[in-house]
Image 1 (tube, rainbow, N blue to C red):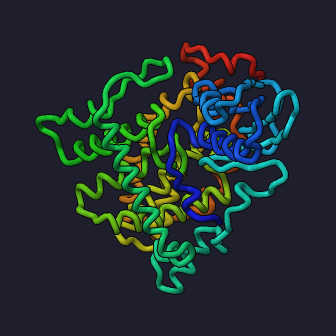
Image 2 (cartoon, rainbow, N blue to C red; image 1 turned 180 degrees about the horizontal axis):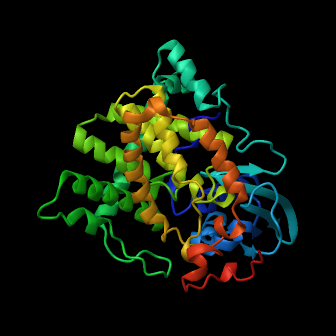
Amino acid sequence: MQSIKELYRIGRGPSSSHTMGPERACRMMKESYPQADGYRVVLYGSLAMTGAGHGTDRVIRETLAPMRGEVVFNCETPTVRHPNMMDITLFCGKTELCAKRVWSVGGGAILWDGEEQPDAAANEIYDLSSFAEITAECARRNLRLWQYAVEKEGADILEYLLTVWETMKAAIDRGLSVTGILPGGLGTQRRAQIIYQRKHIDESPQTRENRLVSAYAFAVSEENAAGGVIVTAPTCGSSGVLPAVLRYMQESRGFTDLQIIRALASAGIAGNVIKTNASISGAECGCQAEIGSACSMAAVALAELFEMGFDQMDYAAEVAMEHHLGLTCDPIGGLVQIPCIERNAVAAMRAINALSLANFLADSRKISFDLIVKTMYNTGMDLPLGYRETSTGGLAKYYPVRNPAAESVKE
């Protein structure tokens, strides 16, 4: 497995695979061919079908500027290897300098044609890749999960995670301070501030918890939808889950920043297990791969904060993922707004519920986290194309919003 820095990427929304990945690929091409003055980028699969709503064409043009060129949405040609496929061709005058195929495989990671693994230059620093193997090793050596991460990554990983945590908190603060309508033409209202400020006169502790956790999740998700700076955890579309539960726990239970970043390290291990053995890409496995993964990561982070045992941690992560199995990715109009924003709030609360169940029932568990990760991947492969970030099925099909890029899709 690679560094958890590859999982927690700081950047602008609204999509790690549809904006961050293409931006990264175009930037690398531009740097490799500084003499280029023109381009042609062809988007296929999910990139073509939701690219307009996700801002893929916009970020490509911005990244390759001042070059002039065109972005083509090809919704007809089948993809290979991964649904997020794109061809980048650069020109100098009328002379073709290069033509390369690249896949955006989730969480901002990219895979160039000819490579076996995404981001081949990144070192594989973890020799174990299953949660069972990793926790068994930690138990044998009396290590917490975060200590295992520090051992493999080096002490500077904690400094990086502090930056991650500060970025997460800043996204919450910005999201809570803004009202109005999100861009994209859907007319989605920002609601984080409304949830945060509408305290009931007779509010119970349970209602307060739900309200604040939801407000924080909405805040980050709305910032993501508006193209603000967020942290992939593990993706842009699921970036509100982990910050929401950690911010609430810090405020309500007094956990220190050091305890929070240790929890982020532990959550990163769980996310890496999913990324390595299954997928965190909505285009590949549906929203279960994004929101389900974020919920599992949040559950592990909470288990670390409360110093739970590895059986409890495994159970919390498994429960969090199991009850997202089959969750479709059907963004209305190709925008990361409906149902994406609300799903972050629901998953954040579900992570807290998973922690509670793990506290009571871990010794009776039948299903392991590793098994549910494998199940999630197989379930995702069985989902019809319309439910894997193409905006051609589910809510996107029945809600009356025109998505020009998706009109020529044939399933």
